[in-house]
Length: 124
Image (cartoon, rainbow, N blue to C red; front, side):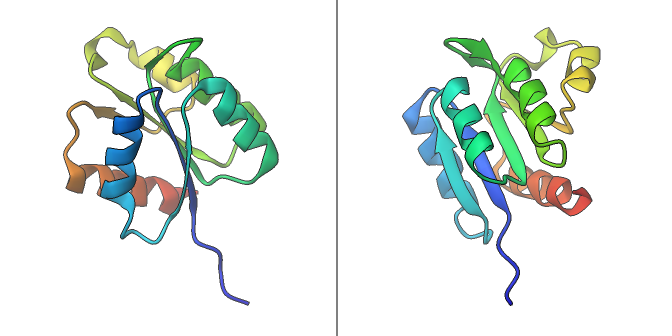
């Protein structure tokens, strides 16, 4: 039986950011699932196994850190990555508490994003 491709959940309230992330990752062989809110992301996490969650920090209705912490409680093996344009505002202790394995700054570098996600999935 063939091994299933890693499932990556992308979370951002801006459709254009989700589209850009999907475009960057489309040739990596991942199954890509998207959500436009923390609530929608948690529904996905409850319905299926995900191998990684990549979330924006600032979203209406909740922060990416809060989402990633809850994702870790529901699916502890999933790698958790945070994307933000304001990395300096997030204390390292908060990242650690949420189980974030990588912090991606906006604007991101496509090659670095792909490599960081591949490394995170390999640890899983």
